[in-house]
Image 1 (cartoon, rainbow, N blue to C red):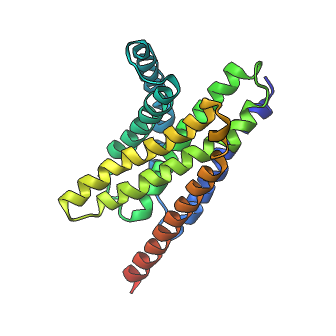
Image 2: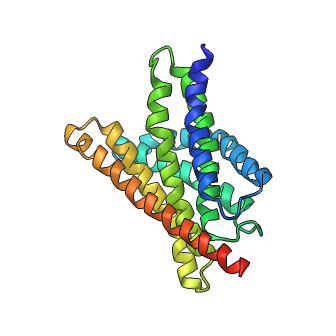
Image 3: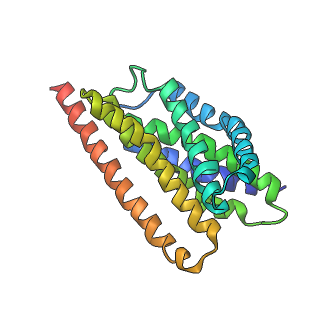
Length: 232
C-alpha cells in the first residue's frame, strides 16, 4: 500500500496538534506528558475494539434501533469514555494541569492519538473497498474527534477549577455526556442514510465548530490573563 495513504491518515493529526500547541502559547505543556497522552490515546483503541464488539454482541438482546445503538452506545459512549479516562488518569491530577486551556489541550492530544490509530486501521483494512477512505476520514472524522475533545476538555477544566462540589460533579458528568451526545448525533446522521437527516449534517458540523472555536478563544484569553498576572 502506498505510503501516501498513511500520510493522509496522520497529516490531519499533525496539523491539528500543531494548532492546539500554538494556541497554548502562554505556558507550553511538557512534551513528555503531551506524547504520553497522545500514545495512550492511541493504545486505548485496543480496549475500545473489545468493548465495542461486546456491545455489538449484546445488540440482538436489546430492542433498540440498530443505528441509534451503534452511534450513541457502541461508538459514542465507548470511545469518549476511554479517551476521557486517559486524561483523568494521566493528567487531571497532575501539577501541569494548572490552567483551563490545559483541559482542552490534553483531551485533544488523547483524541488525536486515538484518531490516528483508528485511521491507520481503516486504511489498512478498507482501502481496497474504499480507496478514498483516508481522505474522507481526514476531512471529517479527525476534526470531529478534535471537536468532541474540545467540548470534553472545556467541561473537565470547569470541574478541575471549580471550588463548589456540586458544580464540580456537574461539570465532570458533562465532560462525558456532552461529547457522547455530539459523537452520537454525528455518527447517527451519517449512518442513518435518511435524506432529511443528511440535510442537518452540515449545519450540525458548523454548530460544533462555532461553539468550540468560542471555547478555545475563551480559554486562550483566560491563559493570557493568568500568565500576565503571574508576571506582574
